[in-house]
Length: 281
Image 1 (cartoon, rainbow, N blue to C red):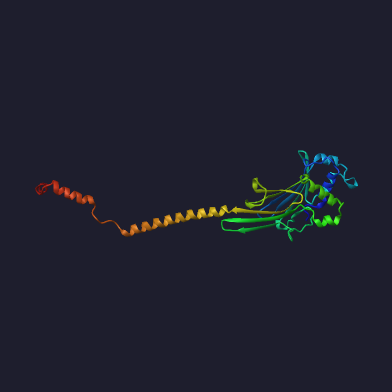
Image 2: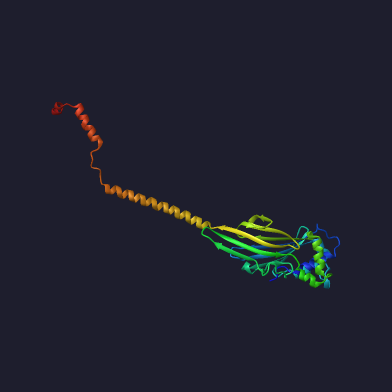
């Protein structure tokens, strides 16, 4: 599955080459946005934003009388295609849905580079512990046209012209890679962490970046169950203590001793009454 192809960039930058007034203030924006869920499923959107005035000037700018608008649409990777205008830019986006991020091909501007060797897909792993789960995510972004392709195409080829143009003014193309992570991010190598656990990398043409995120999800249900079991344990201990105390009291039997007030009355009687007074009664 091709995520971003060289054809898209060639069409775009070939058009930029014929516009002499292009400056770094008129950036073309490439945004790769990936959303991953805890079950490894998710979506990936490739969004290419071009200045609307370039789209208008390039009404018939490409070969075979094809407009720049149609050329970009044709070159977008397969997926749910959308176009819309926002500010001074026209956006072209393609969204795919995947069931397992471990089969999601990494981002490569030319679909050729194998750096690092054998790394063709993103990778996500999960480790479960009693009170929490840990998630580890890795991806790789290759925004450099491979030297082998440049050498094979010849010095005056479109590939080399594109490479020379963007290398000399890297601000012409702004690349953003975003990951919306499903859990709290605790470690990363991103340039910025936004709201809702979104990690952002700001890239330029020629960058080759390894993406790394570590996340943690607390198992609140486990904590809740531990709290409930703790309360139940305290209640059981209270009931057992009450039963033991009641049982001991019953075994002791009733108290047969005279109450203290009996002795007190007896001595009071001896003190205040004479024996003869008792006979009068």
